[in-house]
Image 1 (cartoon, rainbow, N blue to C red):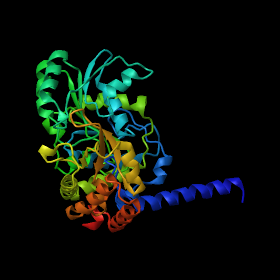
Image 2: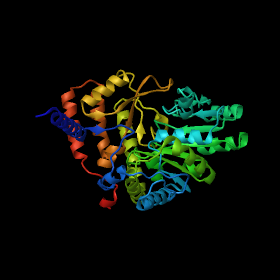
Image 3: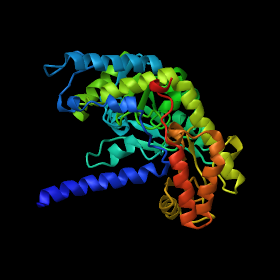
Image 4: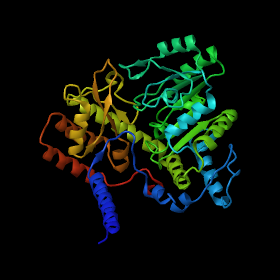
Length: 415
């Protein structure tokens, strides 16, 4: 056997091991999900060999020949997204939620602008200002109410009055509750009418699609930026929504050619299929995710695990935030959970809550078949790890649960 053949077999073996491992895990990562078989079939390899560049917001203004059907596919995806989210303008060219955020900053900001932004792991203005490019933006953290796990509205209003920022960016990588879009935008109109409110919906886009969270564009956000794969369960990529043509044109100019040339066309049919699924099954899908999150939070609480947002029902999203200081360090606990085939991430906490937390999301296990009555058993497995019980016993229970969650719900093919 030559070296090249051996390496191919090694790659195939590693993929097989990965797939076997993940099929026998409970995936509680809040930023991951699983698409339906239909959406996976619509990820079209041939399109990844093609170029579909276009300028501005005209989908038919293509730089390459041979795009007549590609443009129609993208147009259909746009139409479905507009219908689903109530947006007048959609851009699917960003390759990730992060690129969508950077594009919005480049489009709507100018050197020297002040930007208020939630410290959610994606402080876009801060990243640009501290990058080697040193884009001249003054990034100010939006004050956070740790006890309520939300924006401190009064303090933020005071900052808007004081600094009159050009951009205010809200949203979160750990999104428990809707944020005060309407109140912030009203204040911005009063103190800087030319300012823009950007809402990072990456984690909750599916819940917005299912009309079970909040409607940021309706409440006053100028721009919604998002990824397309977390609660939305589509292929990985980015998306930008707005109801303002001038904003859409500015963002389009920032995306192409600065940040994205060819925009990975294989995603487009799969995104159209994803939007169709949410138009058909969205409310029941989002309701199941939120109900399961609340049920799991309640089950953990009953077993002595403190969580953020206790006085507010723990969560109104797919995510919950257990506080694990009394059990150990967050990353070490996440490692122990993974050893038992429970995949979850460590998370920092606001000072009011403690030091060590876990970020848990139920969107993938919900898609695979979890219902509210499964929450106590999942909580027992998590608590077993927190208390240092026999890993082999916990692992066996987890694998049995994972094998039970063996379907894909909320898809056109199941309705």
